[in-house]
Length: 231
Image 1: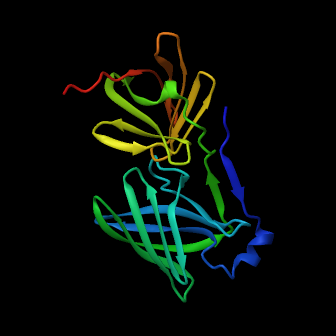
Image 2 (image 1 turned 180 degrees about the vertical axis):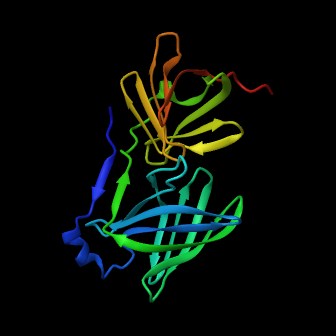
């Protein structure tokens, strides 16, 4: 079983990072119309000078979602995250020590306000491995939970660097996979946007037999190659 790579910045080293002000654990809210959505943001800078981060929405399935496109320019902080729709955050560090700005997604725009609460605890997924040719392509299956059947599609392909990447399609939504790893005939992929993990094995009949786990719910899921699209 693969373990997530956990980057923990200790309180002792945190004091030295105050100069690089965005570093830290930030907690606050997104002011969605008619309600407030709590979020936790962790930002840290590696020894190589690279910014990394993760974000969680505690009352949702989006936990420890890695940040993308992180940009720190003076007091301006920008990044993206899949929650599960892609969201773009554009914030500014204020003189009062807060981080506030606007988050944009397909659902619209909303203001957010964060306050730094301590040292960052960035939780990154393990890196994806190379994609074996026998796993490449589009797979389909059905997932039954509590008497409800959902058609599921999974597309696995190679990123420019050769690492595996993937997209999960279900209930009309397409959700990028956070990480995809292989070990022989075994495959494991994770989508932190929905707190879901799949572990399966490719059998001699060309089917991937495995189990989908979403928080405390587990269900069998057999993936078969999708039929070629008709011309």
